[in-house]
Length: 126
Image (cartoon, rainbow, N blue to C red; front, side):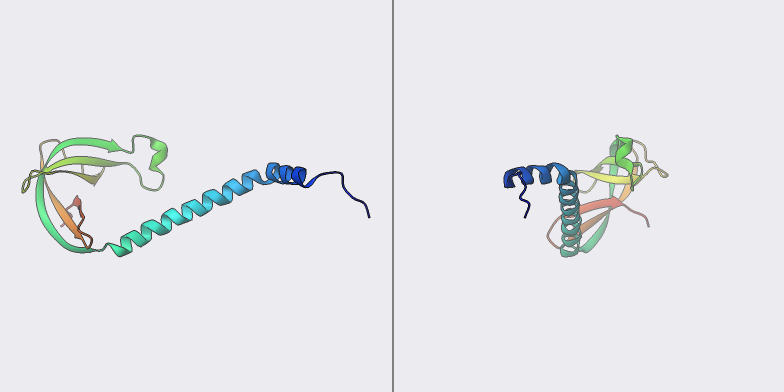
């Protein structure tokens, strides 16, 4: 029987050095899977229960994403700061680049009331 002169501690250090990239990759993949799963569950647990058509005035427009590398999968879109006419609240609304709205224009918005009491807004396409 041939016994190695490498200690158990050294075996662990060698293993850590050889497989550290794989362990980091697996950890990142697991974290990503958990994040996606949590967002899907959150959407399923908070459905839209009512909608209402409101109007608002565009106060500010910005192009998003500012970093083009962040556009993977979504593309470039506008983020509008819109002042609602019914309660004077300022809300953020995403919009398609193909249909821009200028500052000061009045736009129709759909208010989506969710089961857990949160309101979200989107451009009205009706």
